[in-house]
Each structure stands twice: as C-alpha cells, then as structure tokens.
Image 1 (cartoon, rainbow, N blue to C red):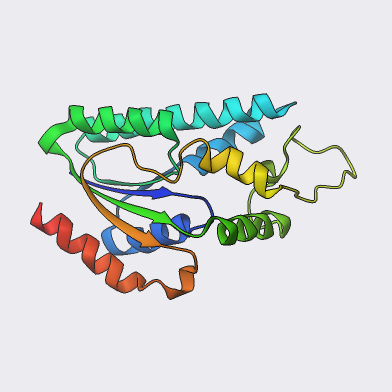
Image 2 (image 1 turned 60 degrees about the vertical axis):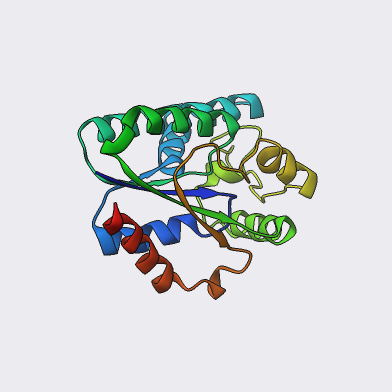
Length: 200
C-alpha cells in the first residue's frame, strides 16, 4: 500500500495539495480538520480547553482510521499538522506497518510571520468552518460577532510550541517552502511523489 502524508504548519496549502494528489492517484483523503468539524457540529465546546480536547480527539480518530486503512492495505492520503504527541504516535504506527507501507511525507513549512498573517486572514474571511475561528464556545450565540482574532503570540503557542513545524517519524520526506504557495511547482512536486512511490 502507498501512504502520502501531508504535514507541517497551518496555512501552507496542505488541503489544496491533497485534492490535487487525490485527482492524480485516486486515493481517499484522511483529514483531521474534517473530523474535527464533525465534532464541533456534534458536540460543540464551551471553553478553549474543550476545543483543545476535540483537537486531541480528532487526532486520535484520524490515527485509528489510518491504522485500519494500513491493516486493510488500502492506500491513502493523510492531511494533518501533527503536533509532537500525535506525530510520535504516527511514527509508532508506521514502524508497526513496516515494509507493507510505502510512505512519502511532504512537509510544508514557511516563514512563521507570513503563515500567521495568512492564517488570520483565512479565518477572518470565513473561508473555513466557523468552529476554527471561535475560541471560547461553539456554536455562536444568535447575533454574536464572530470576527476572528489571534495574536502572533497565540499563533506561536498553538502551533510552534506544540511542535507542528517538525516531523517525528522516519521515512522519505520532501520539504517544501510554502511561505508563498503560488510559487510552488505543484505539478513537479506531484511527479516527484509519483517517482518515489514507484521506486518503492
């Protein structure tokens, strides 16, 4: 089976790349944000600690689904900004899979200030599920201002300090500077991934 992992910092274009890879390879996508949004809509949250717990739960669900896919020898694309804890669990899962799993990781990173600005702009413009922008409770109250606010310090605490700018598992890795996603040669990147997978 083949496993393509898209990891790294938020606002680096992982989901867009996942869609392009799905069009090329036809593999299903396991995306943590999709799981988390389902938890937002089903359970909601009434404080930031509860929101964080849903993030941890979404990581656990993603890893269990991935383990089932690996066991069934089904190729898959994974889209997630793994923190240190979930990244180490992924590493253990891949070790257990051994040679049955042909893995390539695309690690997207970039200038933290640019990523912060793009992250804030994206959620401020309502381009993602509202649960991502809300910090203290979800769903919003009727008529509530849902404008998104996050300081650079908050961005660093949530992503950099949790280790999402690092990878915690072995295997073939392609590092991509996604400071400005429009400059990435996506076709060339996909061709490189395909070549690595073909080599086994």
